[in-house]
Image 1 (tube, helix red, strand yellow):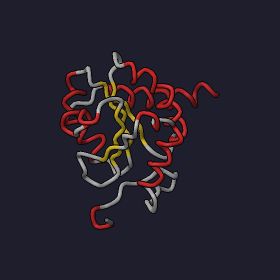
Image 2 (image 1 turned 135 degrees about the vertical axis):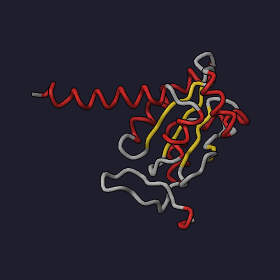
Image 3 (image 1 turned 90 degrees about the horizontal axis):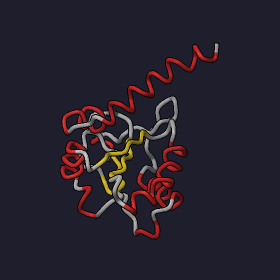
Image 4 (image 1 turned 180 degrees about the vertical axis):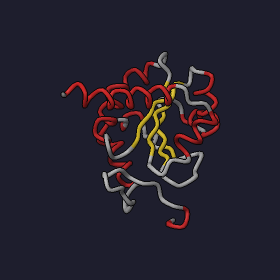
Length: 151
């Protein structure tokens, strides 16, 4: 019985991961920008030493935000990932780069880039909490993007 319950969950999880892995500028808009839920993205390169060091921190962040904020990683070594990073200005401050999409129809988001010494889970969570203060949540507890009229 447990396997039957987990199977649909695994299928949905795999589909989400595959769709995020294949983001291009057009699907980025439909998946991230036009979604009513808040998204936190990490822009990274698998070849980047700082990104490798940051990876366990990102894993902690993803875990603590589960069911509250959607998260995804964008590989800038991928042609489509690089296009997205350039469009949102993620490369202007170096990588790893964290960007929050918390306003309705905002295609740029805001940088949560902290000084390298502050790229710890607690500092990022503090900055995130400050940005999302007063935001509405869905019935399931997931943060919802601010509507333009709310700002």
